[in-house]
View 1 (cartoon, rainbow, N blue to C red):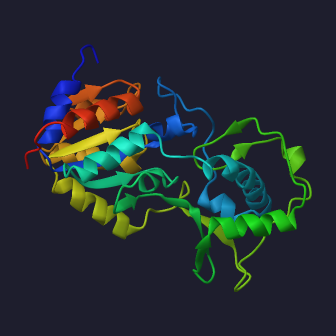
View 2: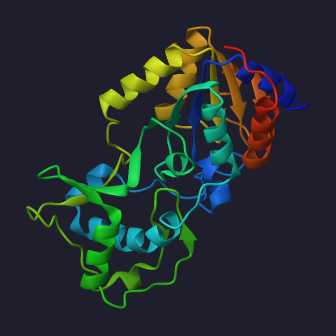
View 3: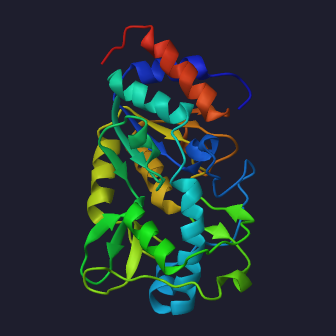
Length: 280
């Protein structure tokens, strides 16, 4: 954008009825990289697909080895100033809902309530055979026991929780199965090629359609999973505001754009609203 419109954004938020749609760009200040840089160019090839994970044992073993190493970054990540500011806005009563495309759980860790995790959460594991869900820490202990001393040189960490390593370092890595039924385990997240659970989509659309403002934070809106909510808001005449570093595919539908680091911008916004009466 050409001018600073944070004051106008504060006025929009102060009206209340705001629904947040957040993406990977909100978590970069927590040390978790996003999928695309400011130019919108992808940082890497398409992540693991559901079809490859379920049908190809080699691909599944590769994923679990990489994800086992990547969890050391994702699992240790802490909420940043942007997450904390969103939680503060919710506590101020101006947010009616939070929908996130992220799988890192950092909104909730910052104190936000009732977050719709559109794509799931990496801290949960699901068995594809019996459906039982369990915590990630338990799985990590089992993987450590099955692969004593496993280590590999990590060249990059990805926002979906895996890392880039040389395939030659995967030799001998053992995958573990469901402790209850022996079935296939998978992170409780939505892979490429997998459908977002319809109840999450319905809940998200319900929030958006009842909002005065849809506030997009840190998302390039490249994939339809998130962009569809912007399209619906625009169709329904709901204001769309975007805070992001770089261009997004939602820009043509936004009445207000702020191109700035999210932590500082959202902290300033929450500080400003915390000092002024909020209308509803």
